[in-house]
Amino acid sequence: MPPDFKAVLSDLTSTSKTFHDEATHYRNLHDQIAPPVVSGGDSGLDHAIKEVADLIVALHTGFADRLDDHGDKVAYARDSFQRHDIDVHGLFEDLMVGDG
Image 1 (tube, helix red, strand yellow):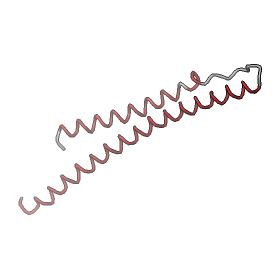
Image 2 (cartoon, one colour):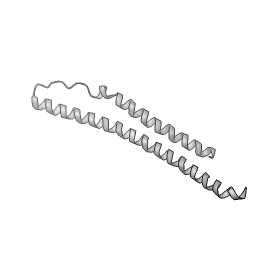
Image 3 (cartoon, rainbow, N blue to C red):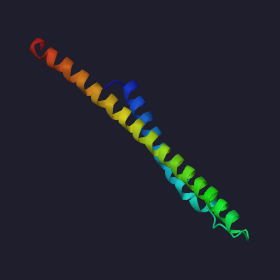
Image 4 (cartoon, rainbow, N blue to C red):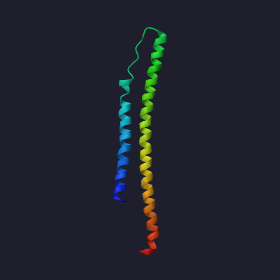
């Protein structure tokens, strides 16, 4: 495998790990973005506040999931590049067997 290609693979590995690490860090912020909802004194207002708070939590969770998805996609791309490189080297080795 050429040295330049190994650098790309290591960059993709690092990027994938960073996406997954940041998704975990973002999920750990849950308590800070979702404090307990207090009563506003009116049941209609309390319901509206709870719905907005639930929406914020859902968006927060969705964003963390997207970060994980991107990490998975980068890892898949890295694995595909690596498989492709192995296949190309294998093809050349197969072609050169009779020439050696």
